[in-house]
Length: 434
Image 1: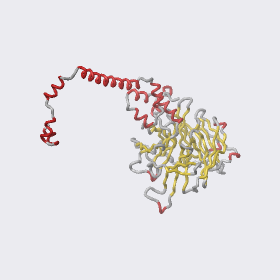
Image 2: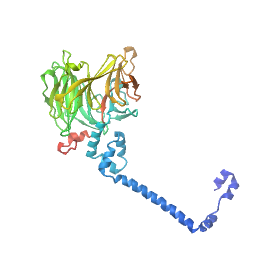
Image 3: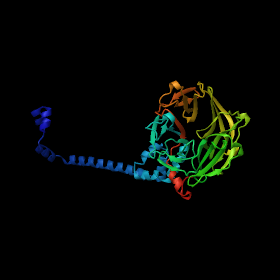
Image 4: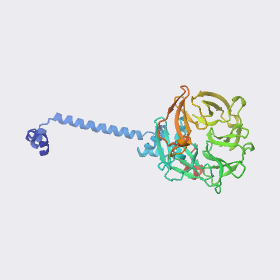
């Protein structure tokens, strides 16, 4: 009290400070009604506290199926935060039934984008990282690979939240990774390393039995550019050779896209005629898909999945053209011309773009690549890549202002909690992946 009195003006404050005796006498004069009122307030606070506790307890008393149905609709970042809310939610999220339900729900939502630095985009701080983008919130999440085994390899394909990562010049290693959980498996090596002209690896899912299959196509430098196809299912110990139609053994083959139960590649013959090669992951049979002349599909198309639909895309000069692939079975697919957009940009070999996925508001997310001339090259090299949105109806571009490396490889990605280790090491009869 002495310190308080000095701060407020010394002895003038002391007359306002009541003695303990004064507090005691006032308390003795409290009426019975005052006691009852005070007791009533305390009782009301206690009741409110019990009510809040009952509400909190009631949330966890909901059926696990209902909690699971609510949580699986959240973005993957929110699901990961929910792991730390309480034991009940953690148990629900780690349940294999929830993991499979969440994976199915992702197909009802727009795909995300994941990218990996390449070439001049690789720095000391991102050498062992991938970046998961949120194009709606304009955010980028850097995910570090603690194993540091994936550095120098390429993202080849994605399926149900799993990434297939491999080298484009040698057969091994090939990893199946879930960047969200940090788990990965190394697939069995096939044979000693050899130099390849090309190496493309695709990942597919057989919904009839819950199996994941990895198919790769490669061209050996020493065997006259004859394409070979190998396959392995997660859980198997060795690769097996696949018999392909003779017509494609000496074709140029590009990338892979998984759609509607099949892996698809673009193939190009020497005379310039292009078509698609499909591999049904259930029957494990190949089918060559030729385009009718009336569709007028050009030679320089790209295969892209846009919001669940398979499309052929050509970006040439100042235009973007789209063809839609229709049909439920690989044997009966048809191709029809759908749309042409004016982009007001003259694309060429030094400035070109690729569609990554469809975007909100009837737009598209593009990856733009710029090859700089020698005099303009910086410390990162000649290549620069950017992400931008294109809105065809307005014929306008809108830059995507998300921090990304200066050069990268992108893959459309649907984040899940599926464990590649469980798929590879747990017997298939014990999996819940359908």
